[in-house]
Length: 97
Image (cartoon, rainbow, N blue to C red):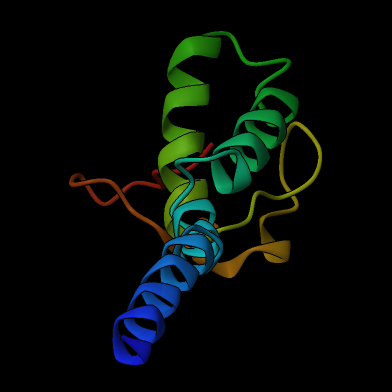
């Protein structure tokens, strides 16, 4: 009888703890706020003066998710994020706006 109570207790405890252990992993992948919110706001800022905002935001978002950073301002400053600066398109041109 005591064994059943212990097993039940640990099972219920694990059900309570499991979501808190998984939440940081979900947030890190950007599915729950975290990276998605960061990239969205930084890319809207970065692309504010772009001629083709939808395209700029799309490619900025791809670069941000990969590099986990976006340079400040609407142009230049790519030295702040080397990964963002060094990403190239299939044609060998800079991928990130």
